[in-house]
Image 1 (tube, rainbow, N blue to C red):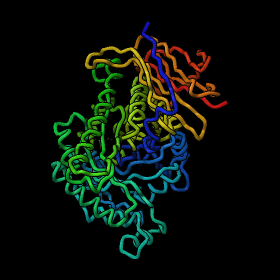
Image 2 (cartoon, rainbow, N blue to C red):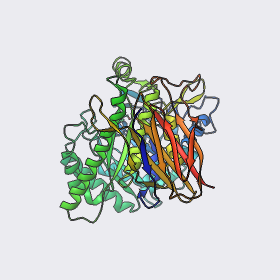
Image 3 (cartoon, helix red, strand yellow):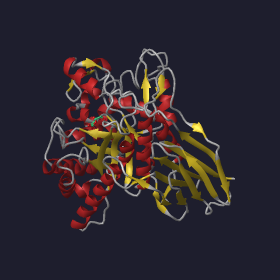
Image 4 (cartoon, helix red, strand yellow):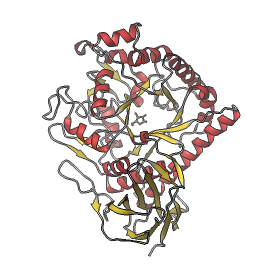
Length: 504
Ligand code: AHR
């Protein structure tokens, strides 16, 4: 029997008010994310604009406040002018990142419309790969200005009287990556990003800018890249980006669960670098983190390489269509707990991606949209994880895995939503073969009662969902006691738990 995990929850132990944008996601012009994903005019469920209503419903169910667009690697050779105006005059382009033909049927106007339909806002990226400051300014003017100037007037001529009002702007994407069109050194990139952000803020002072950090913690330039880029751009940007994908390549579930400790180290390291540059510059301003790409990504990689190599330049090919397993869902649950634990610094996070491409939502081109296993932890966190993240004063056992030491058995975080009178504890038992007795001291929450305990539980780590049905979905748990303000239960091995209490 594993040792008991004990947690004391107090309203005063606040980490931070959670920025709802940590429940963001991402739609890239890649594979079937846009075409056959959010947009399929010939599908039974298409609305008057050709958007799939079944997908809209599932995105709304997830509660995604912000969607990053249009890339990703795609943005580094993006010609936004080709995506606006009369559709029959739009140019088809070659997307070099994914070796695909881009028809540009969906552009900024259509995507902004879709974002409204799913109650979300757009986080737009500018092309700092093959283009630069002038183009970023033109795009911003087209999107946000209501002046008599050329691009603003052009938008109105195209039928969109109101500006889109896009507040969040990414200064390119993964500019350290050798795979990126227009890859740059840290200093080169830092200067371009600084000038782009500076000029964009001169045009619209209400925007916020995200500068590219390393495209993963494993990059050889990691650390120095962030320091150099921020050294150049610190005064003009608001967030630095982090990207990380996870995969169980060694077929070792325990180590897969433990690998999320690396994500936490990544967050701590980038926060420290931001603060180092802050100190060096004697600045009063704090740069926060935008973890704008995260997910499991490894299942379909071989097939994808073959598709791109052997069948290039097709229209919306099947790419990055990872079919997620039970253990992937648990990993994503742990990632969400880590973001909440660091919600004092992580203000934006985007699950990459949203539909069909490494996504929680999949579509059949002539059938329904359906939920992958990873849909559920995100759904729970987005639904119950709003308010203030509370510091979990917690004792739990630790274990060792193939590549990780001192791995906590249980990862958990309480979230207090004062407005709703709701307290939620998110907890994952990372042990793959033992239950963990779990106790939460909730005496500080007088009058609260357990309203529901939802969990993902399975002995089969490779279980997955499909259009035919959901083998992985939440169960409601009732085997617990709640006496004298103490919640006690046993957490199943490799389980995701969402314990919700409400004021009676
Ligand atoms: O999300 C898929 C890809 O991963 C993105 O295009 C890129 O930014 C990252 O390498």
